[in-house]
Image 1 (cartoon, rainbow, N blue to C red):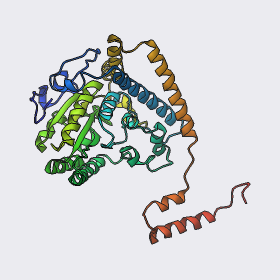
Image 2: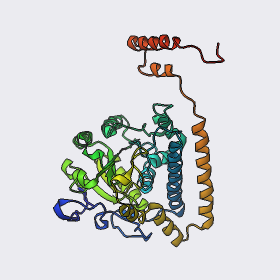
Image 3: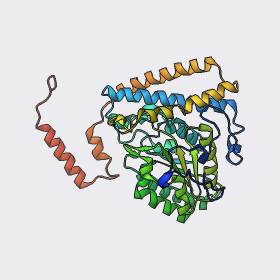
Image 4: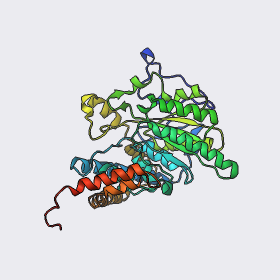
Length: 388
């Protein structure tokens, strides 16, 4: 890990200045891939006293998110969704960071933060409205302090910094109200200019924002070593704020690091960059075929670091769960999938005219002209059989 306030460690030193996709010595890790607790004198305090109930909640969150992801993928394959963006393998990064936030914090996701959304209380079916093509969003962001999905790569990082700067100004009038913003993005998006510009502004204004990068090793078909020659967390030093590299498959470590980063931001100390090193086990989207650019051996090596299995090992070893816990969770997961399918199939297509009413707050002559053209165009078709 490297931060402005914590001891620096050297990079892994791989040839040619490249950084290995996974080097445990370079990561904050509180739970090994074998499910054994590890000590960390700094970040360990944020997770060492977590009650058994919270540990079980972490596992439940991850298990339900994975089942949701599987069902959404099946729905797309069956033609019920236009596309889907899988997140299997990244559950710990999302649940750990999502559970570390507080209700007043505002989160800006990409298009893959399904588990984060579920920790904020969204009904999973709401996430599928965009992918079924029946809504431009799917939920009211202000109800959950969770913004709509952003399909434009990295655009949400600029929105997040702007929102964080707004929080700063609100706090001048209400200094007892502390809140932070989380901007999620991937390793591929880190190459976008928007990310650089957002970090420049965040550093200049000490904005209360946590940049949370899920480094899942692949930007579609481009490997991480092409995106950066050094760990992404090291880039934070160039902007003048802390950066931390954490094992993104370790839900305890992600939770602890996120807790610290959010406290740092809320207290007026400025932004933080978190690089959660994880892995996308599936395709980039359901339109992608990862067998064209990835080796199966690589995928298998990451399956051995599965975030759910390592937490299950810990829970069993410490006597926090029994077989009944997992049996009941399996029933709950299947019920979630069944309800999700029912909700998706019950979604109705919106009236196209509603789209014209949502462009501007007030009536606009150009939009009205376009609507009139549409109505005239539709009148040129013969009525369907059985209609007057």
